[in-house]
Amino acid sequence: MLGPAPAPGREAGRVLDAGSSVEAASAASVPFARDLALVALAKAVVSALVLALGFRAVSDDDFARVVLAQAWAHAPRLDPTGTSWLPVPFWLNGALFCVLGRAFAPTLEVARAIAFALGLASAALVHLSARWITGDRRAALTGALLAGAFPWSACLGVATVPELPTAALSLFAVASLVTPPAGPAPPAGRALLGALALVLATLSRYEPWSVAVAFAAMALLAAARLGQGRGAQAKLALAALVALAGPAAWIAWNRVAHGDALHFLARVASYRNAIGPGGDGTLLRLFAYPAAMVREEPELFAWPIAIALVAWRARRGAAPGAARPLPPLLRAARPYALPGAVAAFQIAALSLALVRDGAPTHHPERATLLALLLLALAVGDLSARAFRGASAGARRALGGALVVVLALGALFRPHLRREHFNPRRDEVAIGRAAAELTPPSAPLLLEVVDYGHLAALAALGRPEGVHPDRSIDPRDPPVRSSFEDPASLARRAAGLGAAYLIGRVRPPVIDFAGPPLATRGAWGIWPVPPAGSALVGALPEGDSSGPAHPADRTP
Image 1 (cartoon, rainbow, N blue to C red):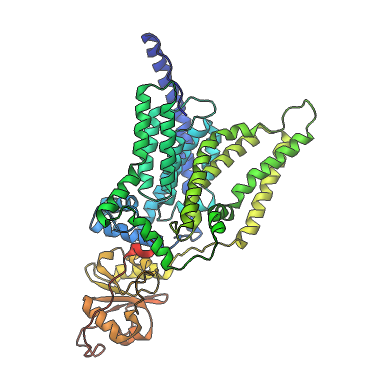
Image 2: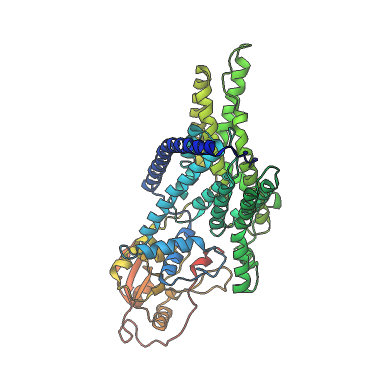
């Protein structure tokens, strides 16, 4: 952490020291910039490869977030969703939609381009964090390259969800308090940068809230240490307060807006209860997050074990008095103790939340990304040191072990139980077709089969003019779709003044609206027939359920 400030020297000495430090900083900035460019380039290549392999979205949440950002760009407000979803991702994406609006419509493609850019920014933050933790250029570079390439980091680097930027901001915050092995202690002002990063992180996802608590405690402990100047103590104390500002502001907002400071927790729990009680017992829930980490990224866990086995065998076979076949790696791992403790605290908090029905409802490994990024940094760091300092025989053994780990990972990965991804290609295609074929001001009625309708909304790019035909929130009473029979569809379209229909190509819709204007997969677009046409006939007007809010996909 932070050490005592050095005693002041003479004025001339300070001037000379300042000049030399500026020259040293300028010299050091050149390789740092090269490394940063390399990390960004590698991340861009990985992201492009992920897209080329067909990945588009983790779940329907990806599309829901795009829809909500589009709605915010159309009508900005302080709380973009009015639900439990935190506001910063919508502020950021919505603001970028507004800025880019003169040149580009707020389409799904623009949202994905923004996600790509945020992935590069996240990789840069991870690399800077690695430099702060290790103090070693090559070790930090290797760790940052690995942290940008393991599968979940690669996928989240192009997904329109905030998990990777949030985890990178959290890692940056924790790293701001770490003293590297060779020193010096980090300046107190760095902790303020970390605290500001946590404000963004805690207003993007709930997982960093426990990180903010740990950060505040560590900053206060550092401020209380002997030898700190008053200025440093004040900065550290301020950093502790700033780190908690995000959760405090959100709790206060919920009290004002909903009459309950913990309204967001009640909403999350009600959603989980509505989709049905989990079949896992308390013990399985407590270990669900560590198990998800190992299941999703087994190579990150197997490779350190392989290094340890190679080191143990090499030392056993070394002649007495001979040079070490491998460098001492435990000492190199010490800087990761503090960040590792914070990550473990976060996972423990998530596990307790899962037991109390207050954790994410799908893909639990997303919430552990801070721990996975930190593990990737440590594995990359130790691998670089091991290969760099190993004897020729130990280096060959390490290379063979690496090949075995990668081969076993490729062999067993397809058989590990995982949640599938949802590209929603047909829904995206019909949304794009509707954007091309319908006037911008024309109101549309959209069939809701499942949460895939969010993909059509996101691809269309103007959710303010679309009426989903029903709510499928499990907390609401079940409602029959108006697309199930021609009469219900006619009443619903007339009641909303819809000019076009988007739905599956099925007999009830064809009976009402005739042949579709265009089809994409199982989906089609129809102009709504005039009220007096033969297709419609004399049908009574009526009403149906209101549209579902996109944020009700998950609480």
